[in-house]
Length: 137
Image 1 (cartoon, rainbow, N blue to C red):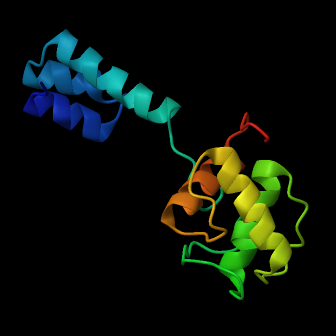
Image 2 (cartoon, rainbow, N blue to C red):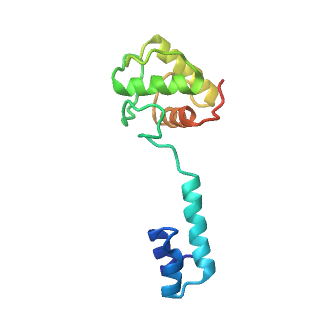
């Protein structure tokens, strides 16, 4: 359980934690716990859209299917290329090849293989494309 001092130490980061402990009388264990949580958060940062995302066409994650087009399709095509080596042109057109690659990915990931990129497929695609050790099917 965090004390107010431990929460304050967490909010100002590792460098200020000992000073907060000294000035508030927080126990060394509380400060050590805060430091451990902070270090865990730093070491397990999730890969997100932006500079850490291998594909950076858009942040949008609409439902995609045959006939869809645009930057979100390019994002999905890039993810498919990274995740399973689909070899798709990242042209933004959700055609026959993109649908087939989507179904292949969904089968490999063990999710519903309907060829539609919805929330679950986006989640898996993003994770697999950005994971350095993601398994290829």
